[in-house]
Image (cartoon, rainbow, N blue to C red; front, side):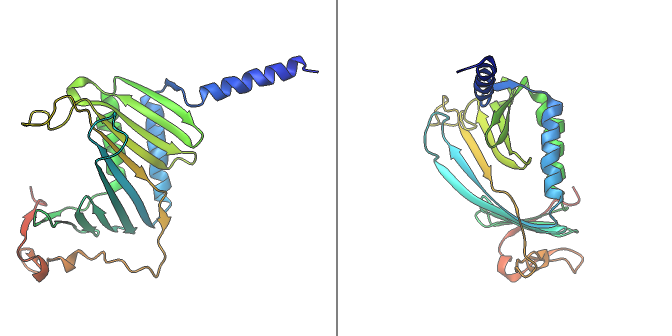
Length: 241
């Protein structure tokens, strides 16, 4: 026999299932806390390896990406080595060196605190721009969507975290193609860029990864000089600008 309690349990279970996956209002403070949690998670790992991929869709309605890029970052303490979109970046606690082999450029810059800078960018530049913020509870975690004003050139940004607060996915939805003013580029295209992150894993102590910027640029003299392998590259030093 079905009693009143069984009916109530079935009803609330159905409501919970319906709520899962639906967009609900969220606040900037709530999203900021989620971003801070991800930042704290990374803070628990002194040495780690992060793998992620970026998929570029020429239009949001297309099922398959036009470009797919595998990227990774390896970090030990204050030093890290990153390979992203064809650019190699090596940093220690004194300098950041980026090598663009396609453009034959080596750029020098002050070291950056990657995770802290990203947290500040979200809290100070992206969240304040949002015209509205929504959240979606999923079996794997929580996804936030920020609707952005037309003046930014974007429709929305989505950021998803897993159940433990690790960043899983970042989706950027363009209002129009960044090249829409260029000749032969359809103005109606609305691209989408999806970046999917694996959970970082701890680096083993015996894993050998070259994180020495001095192998690319010699800093022992009065002015920096490129090592022989990169002698033909243009050297740009942005540290004193």
